[in-house]
Image 1 (cartoon, rainbow, N blue to C red):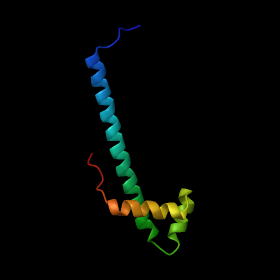
Image 2 (tube, rainbow, N blue to C red):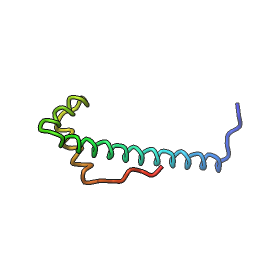
Image 3 (cartoon, rainbow, N blue to C red):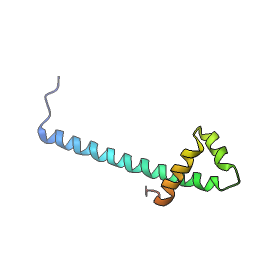
Image 4 (tube, rainbow, N blue to C red):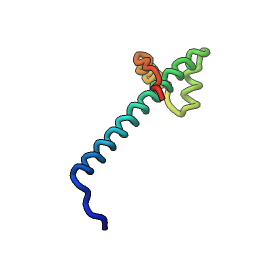
Length: 81
C-alpha cells in the first residue's frame, strides 16, 4: 500500500479536479446554448416545425418553447478552443 500523500499534494489534486469540473460545466452550458439556439432557428423553418422537432427529439413542444426562450436571451458565443 503506498504511503499517504502530503497535505500539499492532496490540496493541489483537489484544486486541479475542481478546475477540470468547472471547465466541463462551462463547456456543457455553451453546448446547450448552441443546441437550443439552433433548434430555435429550425423551429422557424415552417408552420408545425416545432411539433416535428419535438417528435424527433422525444420531448414535448412545451420543453422546446421553454428552452429556446431561455437560450434565445443568452446568445452566448461558442467557446474558443
